[in-house]
Length: 445
Image (cartoon, rainbow, N blue to C red; front, side, top):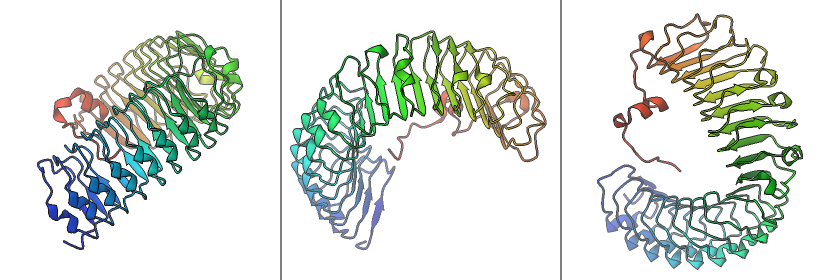
């Protein structure tokens, strides 16, 4: 098969060995060994001078041969979930390499030659055992994305400041606790994810517009970049004084995750378009929503003690509302005033007694895993309703009249006579029937 350009052996799980003649496929552009039991690559792999993509993810390979440096055309190298602990020095010969993925691999160190990859744009080391970045990392002059999340790395080398093209730096969950001043030299950095910025003296990169940080005391934060468009605050334990956020005139998206406050009050975030509140298990009340005059999307998930969402009915600009896994909330406020609301999702809210009347603007209604609901409101006047999805609603007795243009999708609702009890694409089906679904690794990522 000397004319072969693509060889994919994905999920050939019993395959343990490749023939040495693989090196004769001189025209091969792509080699995909994902989720096989291959244990080694032979030296002949280096003869594939035209190879552009190689995926070794979920294989049993423990070591790359030195001959890998011969892959002079290689653009993508995927080593995720492998048992590789080190990279050979010849890795630096891959002068055309653009993307290097080592997620969940057993890689423990990077050879200094990694800095010779002058065209490398993406390097993902998430969930690896790497403890240190070599100083040569500063040689990656084309690097755009660097992910160090959940690694053993304790500090960044000063040479990180030489990554002038870097746009995304992810460090959340790593052991890095001090940011070098060189961070301020990253003139093109747009997104930063970091564990804790409290009590540090830092000059923010000039074009930073996305910040994701863990901080139990927001008042200890340095002044946030005024140009932020996206902000995620994790693990907050003390109330936020409003000036911290009020100054962020450009802020369009805000995510609050794992807060330990009983009440969150919003004020003067006049340009906010999206708000996500997630996994705030102490939260009882959300207030001040009427001040969010431009809010279009609101998502509230996994807030088990939440009882009241105050002023929700005053968000005239709201287009999409999602509420899920809020087991204490018993009623929703009147939604009829939300004349721009197009999408409503209510999932796994066990105490919620029913839905209020819905605005005529609604186009999409999603109801899932809601055991307490026995009827839906009148939907006959929702002429714009295009899709109604209902699943795992054990007490629901019947469905109201729907527009002829509405697409109906129902399953796992026994009182509706629906025969499709289990769907592989349904998260709740998979959660309640884990033995029916094989645990296969993802084919991408």
